[in-house]
Amino acid sequence: MSPEICLTRGCIPSKLLLYPAELVRELERASLFGIKLEIKDVEFRTIMERMRRKIGEEIEIIRRGLIESPDFDYYPEAAEFVSPYTLRLEKKSFTLNDLPVYRLKTCSSAC
Image (cartoon, rainbow, N blue to C red):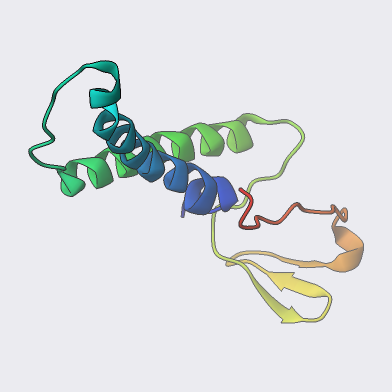
């Protein structure tokens, strides 16, 4: 399982997809500077493949950081809440008293 966080599912993929669109818009304005060009095609498949490759690289960097960090216990398996204060993983369960409580930043449309 990959570290599926806001960065790898929202913010970074969006920016990787927006950049080519912004580049096309800039190129469309080239004539204002005396540059004549024509955009013949936009290969959306190539843009998507680049985005997926970059995200895969970022996920691996995040995963290695979590695994190697002495400050975290990293459990890559899926987890579910089985009661209001109990989180169960495939091989282990935690209650709220066992876990440090962190305030997590959630991704908004501003990412």
